[in-house]
Image (cartoon, rainbow, N blue to C red; front, top):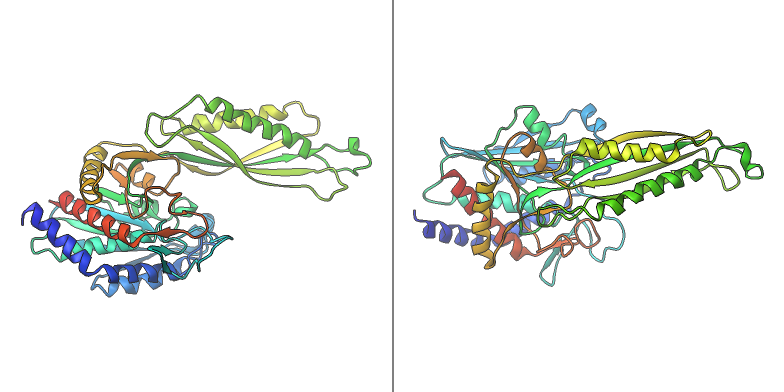
Length: 410
């Protein structure tokens, strides 16, 4: 079968089954899988029969309860489908089924899967339940070909990306459940992503001693000290302004304090204030040094403060994703097909967020992020109210993935 015949056959199959694919996506969106709280096994148990209806064997890999709890979740069952077409490389397609909670401001049911004015709405519609449909129907399109590729395609549908990916892709690799040669992960837009930021979450607890507000000098004000810590943290952003990643789309490092808790009552000097911060690291940074520098700045801010101490605990460290040997070749395949299907130049880039793909890269597996979605995550309302995806973009992304996998296996 020629390249043109392959393209024509895949396009014809996807056109004929487009409504079926969108019905599949709507079914996946309609089952809640918010993380937190992270009780995601019910979603996996709803998706597995949908995949089995295609005639596929679905492996249900239940993550031990203790491991789930240790990673801030209640339950997770990772789904693996293996489709073997003979000797050849193994290409894994990974998407995550856990999603952030809906939050406020929705004008559409976050679990409705409604299609309005050419958009499909729902939490996870773009990030990344759309790629359950993209990847599954890409495999179906390959299996419809008269001349099939040689090798194996695996679907990895995992459930802890919002918690860091440790009991999703990393667990599948660590347990020896899979060892692919190439991986395509969700990209949230139709750019091809080969790098992303790292992320460090720290919890900083400033401790003092409470006292009556009528006699504040008899205590040690933790909030007053925490103000110095906040100033030291945000002062780092001024130094980051002059540092820009060489990877297009990444930008500069940053730090944000997202949570603050403390105090006892209005008339009591606070004895404890806790801060949670998010430090984004560009691919060129050394995560260990970034953490060490931040800890030193925090400790220096309150050094010598009478009656004040500070505890710093790491909550999360997600390493940046960087291109490795084989990434360029993989990216070139996807870029070529994406550019042809979308009729515009689709190049590789980086994104200033972090995702599951880094775990495959850390294991030495060439990985790119690519999947259904609008041009940007802002247009998709990713992690915001009224998250959405165009059904037509899902169709196009599916064609790109199917053709890319065919090339990788041929």
